[in-house]
Length: 65
Image 1: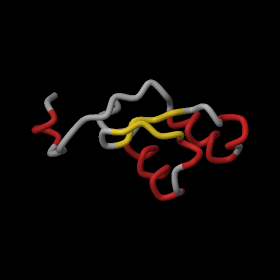
Image 2: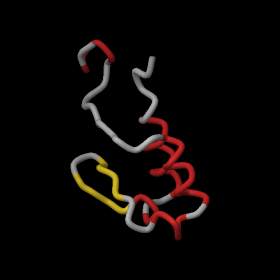
Image 3: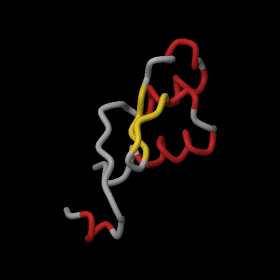
Image 4: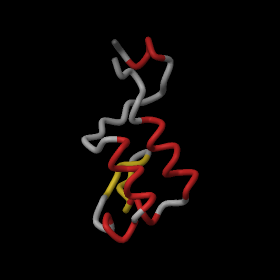
């Protein structure tokens, strides 16, 4: 399936599961070195605002079978 078929502007490929991202929200001290790519830049996940974290987690499930 292509991006245009999904009606999205870009794809983000992540090798980190939503479970790990949720764990990082709950215990950020254990995941201080976890980085994520967000719209063209790389950031430490635990330093992002909660709303941005939620958005990243939500994006990990697009197109999942």
